[in-house]
Image 1 (tube, rainbow, N blue to C red):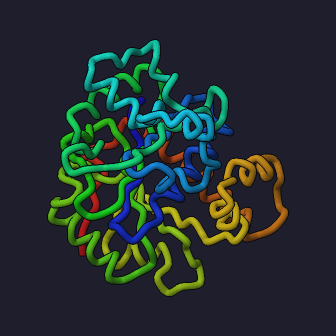
Image 2 (tube, rainbow, N blue to C red):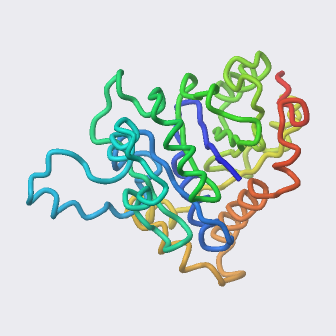
Amino acid sequence: MSKVVFWDLGYGGSAEVAAAFGVQAGLHEKYHFLLMNCGYSGTGLEEGFPPRDNELGKELRMPVQDHGMEALLRLAESGKLLQANMTDYTYPLLQGRLDLAEGMQSISSSRHPLHSVELEAILNMAERLYDIIIMQLSGAGSLYSDRLREEDTLIAVLRQNRLELDTFFEMAGRSETIRGIAPLAIVIHQYDAASKWSLQNIKRRYNCEVPMIGIPYHTEFSDAWNGQDIISFFRRYRLLKGRGYEREQFLFSCKELVRLALSPKERSHHSATDSKVRGA
């Protein structure tokens, strides 16, 4: 398998969804996942996890970061990135199931991971060690479409907001943003089932044929995210059933997203022609 990329228009949501997907899948599926942060360290999909202990490095006043994307880019630039040593620079969140490649301490226009020629080498090496790479991107211009392949899975994350939905489906209709890679699914983040902008009405309004999943707002998950402890949240409710309607709806939506994104049948039919997003 290859990459699962969560992308939003810049209004947020893709980080939470990507991280929740990674933990839910890591706890329940047989694959080995890598969460790859191409942004700043501690931001994006890293926000829901406890920070890696950097105290030793601070005490020693180490001049360079010895882990995460900073180290991986440096190794790729020098030609020293090997299959045998890549996992030395990633951080296990769930042992043997989910690892994290942390983001950059500083990013310049000349050394942004998404625009770096070394990113391809890192991705190629990661795909030898991990079953699935999970990435999160935000912003209309952030889709690095030249590096998206037909077998990759793109998940669009949107809000119940008319202007945002209009913009997305207009872009999708012109194929300016997704450029031939149609989303496997659309996630409505912090979904309100009582809104007039329900999943059914959104699909009808925009003549959308792509599967759509609503992940509702849940206070306990939000608190766990802000407390950098979403792993404990998902572990706590792995086996509980029927205890709290709102929680069950949230967990069911996360499970449905994992099922859809990892479905071999859905992935084998994922192409620009088989799963079109039709604009209004």
